[in-house]
Length: 118
Image 1 (cartoon, rainbow, N blue to C red):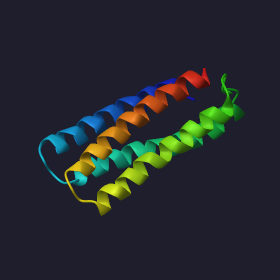
Image 2: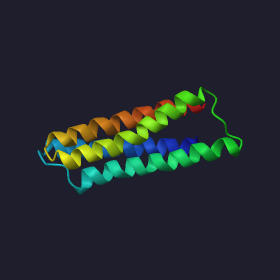
Image 3: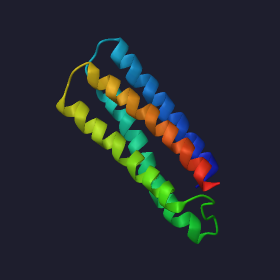
């Protein structure tokens, strides 16, 4: 796992969570900003999957348990897309809160993946 990319992902997920929290605080339904920010987090995680496949082939294998790393990565990748689908179906104010929690959870999971990679 590339360190600078992981840190950038954490920063983007934290920023996306602030956007979603602001949308919830304003009492708005999910909009392009909250859903778009969560989509960016999901797309970065898809790029992380590609990076995690290539990194061991380039001589950067994980130091921790590879199975645990991949379970974190797959779960973290599914969360933003699932929450985005939820927000599209349930167009209430509380959907922004769900997006906020998911983005915070993804940031924590990426940090854990950085620790597992070594």
